Length: 256
Image 1 (cartoon, rainbow, N blue to C red):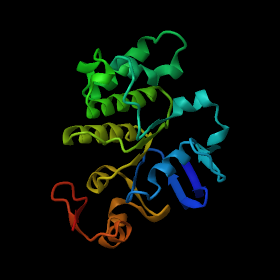
Image 2: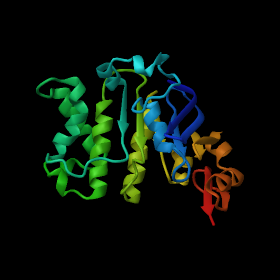
Image 3: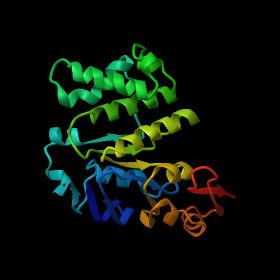
């Protein structure tokens, strides 16, 4: 679905990304993990064509910068780490922003159905008439998740969503709900690239892991291949032990 080879990006003389390769197939959930400052969010922005790179990024076998902007918005969407805390609109209107590529003046029946469906999945339907500015941080996070995912509610095959730390401010229940929504999306032959900090959740939900350190790929592969004590301790400069999760059988990381 998306391919990038030897992606490098620097600001002034500081190398933020250095020779990063990414290849994501249809129906895959890729988690990007690593310590603070590893380049995770920068890589996501480059892949999403928000930050320009000299290297070519192919999306569905076509350079992503050659796509028509409106057409591209029907195929891919991005959840940003930082969203405005001051939006003087009701919740349902914020979420409807995700449907803007589909109508000019007034939303149609399909737009209303898409936003209502996503509000139900993210457990915020009861908040739809509330002022966005009165919500808690976690509720605002779920509003934006609904907005981004409703953007990709269409009949186009093989869509891609980028999510930068979508679990921020969420309680345990809604962290799982958010990841289940993303996993369900990928199980329909769509793909997701998600920046996560919780390695155990990444091990449980992701098909592939991209472990980064200092702007480079430290390890790439399945959770079982990447999440070894050696790889993680090297990337985070902190000791850890790897166990088998007693329920899911995924790698379980215990730090310290």
